[in-house]
Amino acid sequence: MTSDFCIIAEPEATPNVPDVRVEVCGTTPALIFEGTLTTEMQYISVTDMKKFSGGSVSKSGHDVLGILKRDHCFDDPFTLYYQLIDSLIESLTPPDAHIVLVCKHFYTFKFTFKTSSECSNVASFIRVRKEKISSQVQLMPAFNMNHNPLIPNLDDFSAGWQMFSLLSTLHKMNKRSQNMQFRISEVNKGFGVCQSYPERIIVPVTVTDDDLVQSSKFREGGRFPVVCFIHEAKQTALVRSSQPLLTSMNRTSPKDYHVLALSAPHNKNINVSYIVDTRSQADASSDKVRGGGYESEDYKPKFHHFQRPLERVSNMLESLVKFMKALKANHSSVESYLLAIESSKWLDHVRSLIIHASLMFQILNQEYTSVLVHGLEGRDTTLCSTSLTQIIADPECRRMRGFQELIHREWVLAGHPFEERLSSLFVQNKAKDSRKVAAPVFLLFLDAVWQFTRCFPTQFEFNEAFLIFLAESAYSRTFGNFLCNNECERISNAVFSKTMSIWQYLSIQSNCSRFYNGLYNPHKVKPLHFPLSPENIVPWTSLYLRRSNRHHKAMIERTCEQQRMNTQLIAQAEMLKKEKLRMQKILHEKMGDC
Image 1 (cartoon, rainbow, N blue to C red):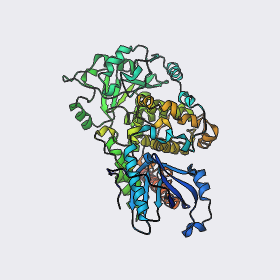
Image 2: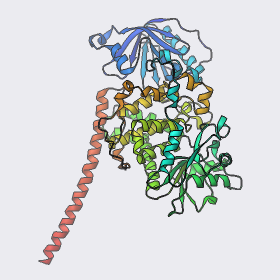
Image 3: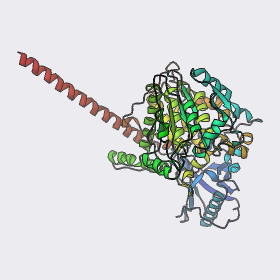
Image 4: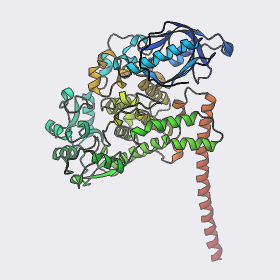
């Protein structure tokens, strides 16, 4: 049994292979069909699909093809792009010669062949094609609309890319802010200042384009400080950037300090603003040796810098893989299950992000001052923090359109490297640069948002089905929004003219109606204060186990509920114990008086 992609010579395309059995693994009832498999240059397809006629499946009586089309958006012919395949496991042992394809969009397929030679030829071709086209953006599913059942027949896709106007965002920020006004700068026209920022950026009117250019020279990747949210009630600003690039004399840039001071002003009654680093002290000090690091003493007394670390991007994928294995394994006891979940540390990462965002909101709301958030490049955990902080603070971001605009503004436009981070879901890529590793950063954010929707079920206009749809759309590369690493690359690859925006798809009522939360109360507009005790962070089984056996999924959910109830009972018992001691003390004092 093998599972690598290291093949040098490219085999010839295999002819049509008839009577191939395809199983959608982990579904209940079992979804198995058969047809003729063809290996194309961009994808494999199965035509002449029909219900599998052998074994016990023929007795089940359910409509396999109807379920595939209705619930899984598969059509005839069934199509699977090579870029969606994360790993291939091959077994040539007769009479069950098969390949298992573990995919990035949370599906796993098993293809069973009549002969070992057919299985081997198909496996070899898939390995080579995947390796050859893995970095070719224009071969992604979003560009091939003819084989994408989600994409409607539209003559013009440009409207979807213009749904969220920068002028509208500018108007909102100016309306919210009393102490500073904003303008749209085109200093990054042609992406000459910062390749990962968009060409047009909202900045304070008091900041000149020359200020931005000089500040960009002092920031990693040119990512100068950008205001992403104004807390209207307290007139404080949430700002993001990348790490500073310190000189050999450990000095700062006066222009960068000037831009930051104007972007993150402190309240008139408070003489300090905060700079919060998402790296640990050790990581920040290590980056300092390489010319980066954190703001020097020159930023004091107006800025106070401190670390509030989030997990390294390079460790996230391993943590998620361990977490999903723990969820799917057959555990001998509840204790072994909980131990496996805890050792994966995935839920710890989710909780850390929620705590981090809650702290950012506390600074804005209770400390009455602004805060700058950055890590190394400001494209990963920084965006997690600033996005979730806005979910906490702004009820508009909990509405369907507001949440879409948040993702568009804080992830797509802000330059999250989707192409690099979504390159794998289960297998780490072999990137020479540690900054280009695959990592479920966007998934971590969606998981944290789901935890909020679970604790505050009436304060979100969208439901968890919408969050799952976003996660699967990101990894399946169905829409252009999640292609490439920034706007510059999307322009170079003609994404805006040749692919559909996910926001245009969601603007069609029939596509979006299933994503609304019936419990939503639009009158609840207060900030969200998440209960941070560990038992309130639970596995998102509807996403991570949605292809698994439903009984196993139900068992996991019951176990989590049992753990939560046990914790509550222990807390109640402690309270009763204290109350008993208090009453005994009162009784003893009264008896003494007698």
